[in-house]
Length: 267
Image 1 (tube, one colour):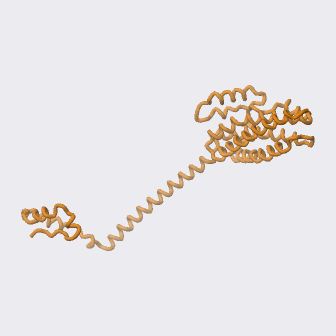
Image 2 (cartoon, rainbow, N blue to C red):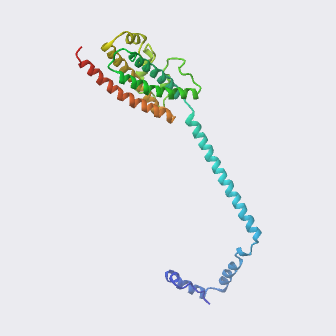
């Protein structure tokens, strides 16, 4: 007798049901016997011992728990390594903090000289420079303390700007050569003679000198800030470097306008 095929939608959609019915009716007895034997030899899951099933389930749960624990431990290890890398300073970070700290320090001294009580037309600019750069100096001082590094470099070298991921371009090379040939070891820093003149001059002449010194001073800091913004691996250092580059670029434009406005005034 041919085996019955399922009725309904499955039977209607099965394309070879007639062929199978024919095969079942005319196939040799040995073939039908093998088919019957294979079905009888299939294991009966329901006949297993309840204790055996519990042991298998428990073993599977242990394996899953161990795998999950291993995954958590691996993730925690990666997070620890990332956190350590995010707080480990390189020579670029240290060099930037030390050099920019010294640069900011002189800008504050110059601004304080202008606010020594004598008449000036630039009190708002001087106060703005003092306030903003004191905050930035505090950040850099905190980093250097955290990294157990001195506030001042043991040398005036700007070689930390040679440690980027790529070779210095012509602009950076010219800047580093200018730093090397500078009396102060850094482009834009005022000399002791400049500072003495700022102390002794009065009135408009002092304001003009202050603006010109501060313009060169700001322009000298931009290559440092841009380099650190591009090359530092620490987000905090990069963020400060970007902020310094943006703020001082804006102040450079402001100082140039002030120089032009002061020059246009009659003596």
